[in-house]
Length: 119
Image (cartoon, rainbow, N blue to C red; front, side):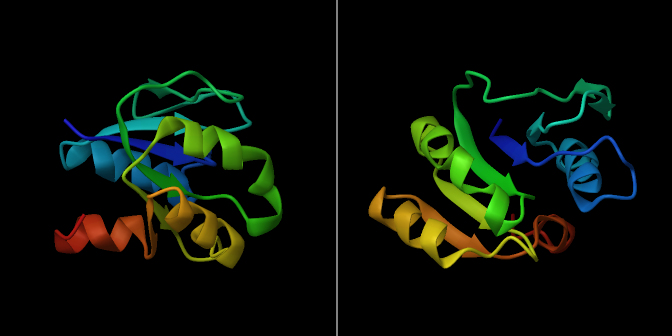
């Protein structure tokens, strides 16, 4: 089962990151929510900080560009196959660095990709 790190996960059910965790789980993927607020989404605890994780296939990004730099080394250290830059998270610098590290960067929407079956 492919694991997806949802970076910027929120316990607020109105947030796209929250809906992404639910939909990933429904579609048979293993979401790993990481955010600054404590709580849970779809029965999965939201991890805080920069937890040690393994076997992350995809990072689905829900952090604004100004909040991303502190996570660059963390994300690269996870060695994901790709980073999905959801709407509002597009960051040319991180996209370039990802490519330099052999990571696919994709400006897309995780919710749409899951809904239409191209995730």
